[in-house]
Length: 141
Image 1 (cartoon, rainbow, N blue to C red):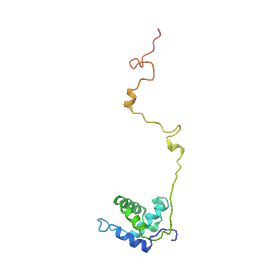
Image 2 (tube, helix red, strand yellow):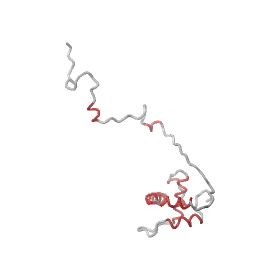
Image 3 (cartoon, one colour):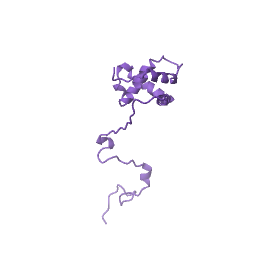
Image 4 (spheres, one colour):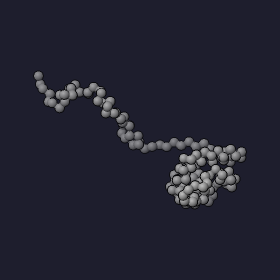
């Protein structure tokens, strides 16, 4: 289990008071296991399906991440860990560049601009025939 992420005892001591208590509903599973799994998923690219089973069900990890994000709990956790005064053991900057497939840009010729019908009605017609004679056969004179 060396390649999995787990919060250390010192880190967990700073995080645990920030977690919500007395919430209604079904009793929560092990917070340390779930939060470690969330951080592991985020470090590995944020794919919940790739999380190991040692962290618990993938749906639980996702649901807990979303709920903590909505309540602002992650900001408190990261500020508590960053402001602990300990010398950081790792520093990293993440920059991701994702190349999409050529058909993701709208197909051949690039994306088509959407023209509203109201704007199109106000424009002059493309042909020389008026709108009243449209569809009528052209006369030879």
